[in-house]
Image (cartoon, rainbow, N blue to C red; front, side):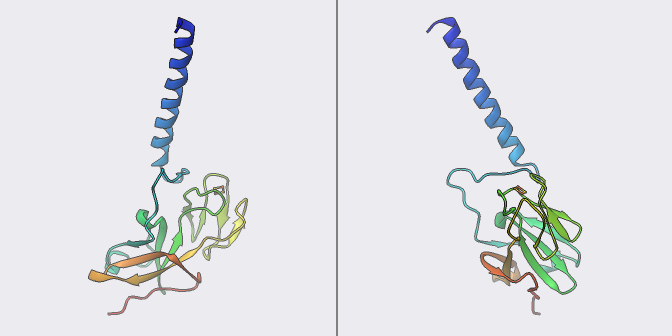
Amino acid sequence: MNRRRFFEQFTSEALKAASETAAEALSDQPGVRRRPRAGERFIRVATAGPPSLYEPGTIVLVDAARAWLRRDLAGFYAVDALCPHLGCQTVPDGLGFRCPCHGSSFTSSGAVRKGPARSALRFFAISLGDGGNLVIHRDQVVSPKERFVPQG
Ligand code: FES
């Protein structure tokens, strides 16, 4: 291999490694698009601790479920944190959500307020699991009006 060929190959591999490192670093930043890594799947059912952790008005990202868990005065609800456009992680925006990637925004009921997203955010069922922990069911879509109220 001559010097020029070696330099071209070295530069190409160094650039590829640098871009992969940057992508991985960015992927952990809130609101930055995060493609699932090979073989990675989001947990379809994820626990979020006991209801007593959450005061009305609280909103938290339950990372394992890729869902926003919110508590209002009526109860708990879980909203898909992945934008229906190309899968970026949304961020809360008042009572609604917005996507930092291409500017979509959504109302508190998940309806598209502004595109390019064309479909609404999904809401997921919540139940109380073993040990009294909230469980988010990504595989059960419910109405945005539905609230989970823990008994007892
Ligand atoms: S991924 Fe959300 S607007 Fe494009």
